[in-house]
Amino acid sequence: MTTSIASQLELLQQEIAKSSEKRVNFQDNVRLVAVSKRQPIDKIEEAYQKGHRIFGENFVQEGVEKIQKIDKSDIEWHMLGAIQSRKCKDIATHFDWVQSVDRTKVINKLNQARQGMPPLNVCIQVNLFGEAQKAGVDETECFELAQAIYEAENLALRGIMALPPKQHDYPKQLQQFEEISTLYRQLKDKYPHIDTLSMGMSGDFEAAILAGSNMIRIGTAIFGQRD
Image (cartoon, rainbow, N blue to C red; front, side, top):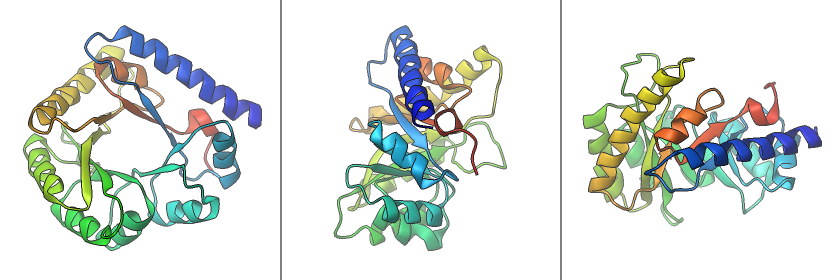
């Protein structure tokens, strides 16, 4: 297991570097979020021992239990999954980032629950392709939520996150990611401090990086199949 996780992390970093070299107008380093949902703690600790520090969870209770058991102050924990209003306090008090914000009610609850702590890093989840089964907002709603996050004392607006329709055709992948990247640049024109475009997973991160992503989310390619 040690060799597998270490080699996969190394291989991914090599692939990220190769993809980054191909893009012209984006100079940001690409950050890798190791998606550890439904993975045992020993695998997360194995990745930690190999130097990885950014992990993402999709389920609040599972994530909180892992955060408490692993108890490493230098790990950056990202909440990636759908947010229930009643879970906002747990998210705000345990996670460092939340990437799946998609409504004002959640913004208000996260802001209230984060009082007395460093600002919670927030990405807005966008859904530009009208997929009814997925969370996320359109272009207009994105700007409305961005302003609400910007005005929230205990939140830090960092950018956007997207999970576009699954495509196996590289040109189609690239086209979708470029549309998302265009929205990100428009948002950055209004909020120059934002710095995170989170898009791209195991099957499409090369196209995402070429389109401007600077944060990708990879799970099974690092840890193997989930429990």
